Image 1 (cartoon, rainbow, N blue to C red):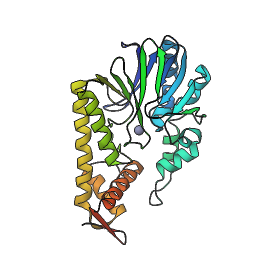
Image 2 (tube, rainbow, N blue to C red):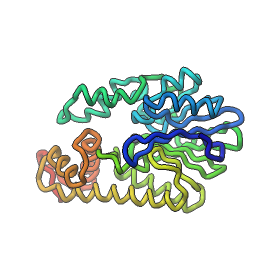
Image 3 (cartoon, protein in one colour):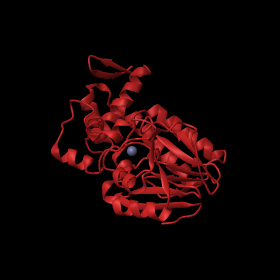
Image 4 (tube, helix red, strand yellow):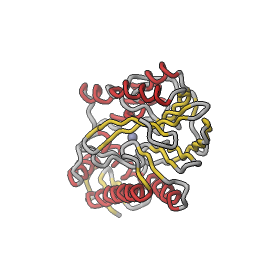
Length: 297
Ligand SMILES: [Zn+2]
């Protein structure tokens, strides 16, 4: 579907209150697709590519399954160059993707169901043609100046794309899907806060006028600021909950208690997120790890 400013999109309800939006930009020289959705979106993603026409570059915001699911079909149909900012093995090798994403620790069991669920979101591996760097600009024509902006946090190598000529900012999961029943988390709380701050400043300075996030419908300035504040509140709640629960227990127990406290499912995303949070607090001297028992200093 066409929006405006040469922006095309397709959308799906991933979970209750969690949309998954895929955006493309039509240039006069070539077109750009940002992320490829999940495997079951194949027909609509290919229809989007047809509608935009002449897709030559696919830019990946980050390598989670719901952003790279139709890579093979898009590659086959458009023969595009694929760009990603990092964690490239997660695109090029599905087993690496699964093990590093879903089994962050020996405390977490593997299961056939989990394997099928996560790997079932993606068609399979493709080769990544080039690495995205902060500041890299794409000029596909129609006055589009799409600048790559590093926004680490949810994934360390996550990037967004800002059309400097319109102020339209395309981003993956820096605005989290907080309605998910599991922790839609982060790899670094500190970097996440820094990235949200960076986006806030770009909005205040007028560089960003609208935000197109994967799991939110298009946001004007006011709604974007509100979504940023909500995400910051979530980060604060995780931080506070970890400190409250660090009463001399081991990490797996702390993980369970924080999930219970914040009403989230016990699964791998929350495990990895809380491990990152605990490690940051230890590095900052706020938590102590005494033979595996976690205390507040
Ligand atoms: Zn993600």
